[in-house]
Image (tube, rainbow, N blue to C red; front, side, top):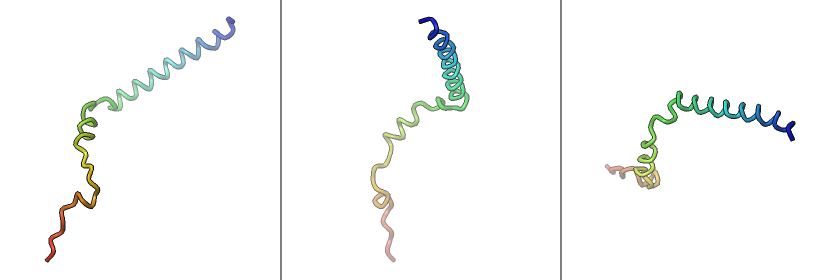
Amino acid sequence: MMEILYLLIPLSVLLVFLIGALFWWSVRSGQYDDLEGPGYRVLMDDDRPQAEARPPKAEE
């Protein structure tokens, strides 16, 4: 029973440091800079197909 703790405790400490490093990297790289912008972009997205979104060409 005790032998498994010798494996699990170092693994859990390593996992905590790995998660902390990934979180620190994401904060430093700007992943959390704009939390509201993507939500507004979804709401303001133009759902029309590309052909309908273009204005009709004026025939000369």
